[in-house]
Length: 70
Image (cartoon, rainbow, N blue to C red; front, side, top):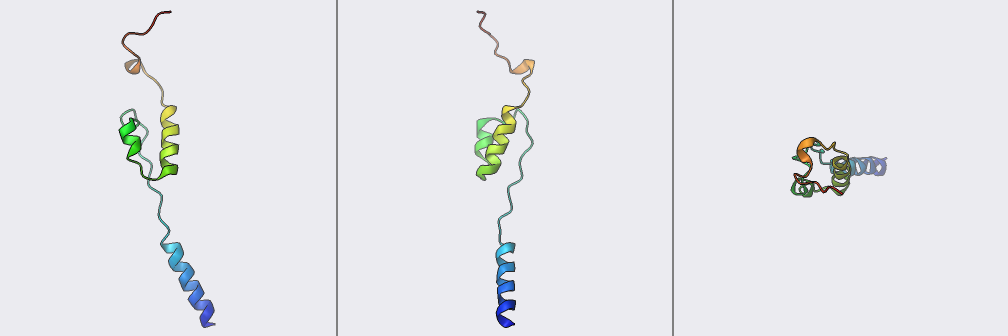
């Protein structure tokens, strides 16, 4: 009985010490700059955030000022 109780307490301590994932910042043009993406320490969160940033809509203010005319 004591061995089971000690095992349950030890398992509870291990589960309680699991790191919580870093919250993902809001996907905006300012947050999606490379400097902002590099500040995210958790690799899985950084990849998901980068993926969402790549789908950020492109507006008229983000187009190049001298587009090439082929």
